[in-house]
Image (tube, rainbow, N blue to C red; front, side, top):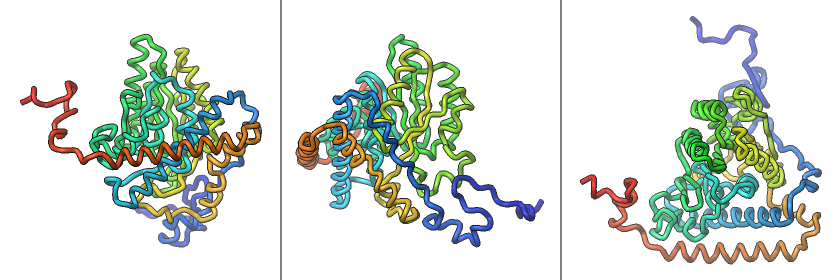
Length: 376
């Protein structure tokens, strides 16, 4: 059988992908920077009037400041060769972590991907130990063993950052099932990227959660790109998460991932549904990472006008302006920014003060009892 496409039949396209006519050659097809840009939707002005307390809004503003300033500091430390290994930053995506975390209780569970700095801090993990962990120091939140890609804080029910794409979604079902079996009303939230929607574990996890009505919320952070590949080039539907929801009897929920208020309202509704025993939800948050996939990626595959349009929809200036419109004084917002800056500086000094883990840490935290000597 010939491997050539049938004569006259166009190649399938979705959401701005090249058609057979547009792609004159392989090089042009693979030069994503020349593709049509995927521009953000405008901010919904009605979100100014959402029923959200001033306290919650100030909390989300402060959290977004923490996430932005801490990640920028992590970037600076990486350039100084102090961050061990690579790092995957959430610059530009802070509204998702801040909005969802604000809707959770302290005893709820969170799972994240290797892009997990923001989700760890949003659950209340202390800034100094988080930054020390990135530096691989023994005063890190995991004593330097986890690093940037594997942050966790069981104390804050942040149950880990996972580097195996989509695998943690099935594990998240485990904590949700545990809460269901124990009769608590704890809710689990699992964050994942758009690329995970084409992984088998995504579909397995949603199917099981729907059948068992587990108290779990799956949040897709759709930043339009997997590692380097545009998600729409390899996905048969325009919205990789939300358009699959119906297959599991779930509502299709899409939110503006650059608007913390939009995220918060959807997350709060999903949390209330889960607490009431009405089963899981799937939320797709449309957002954009301002940098590359990791610090090794300059991100040059993105169209220039696409990047510029999303930079202009930066979630933090967007939220700052909303707070001003709602009557919050500029001086109050400046005080928050300055307080966060001082905390980030203190966290940096704490992180740098730590030592590299010695051999005495090598065999600790290996087994459930905290050591390995009994095995020997």
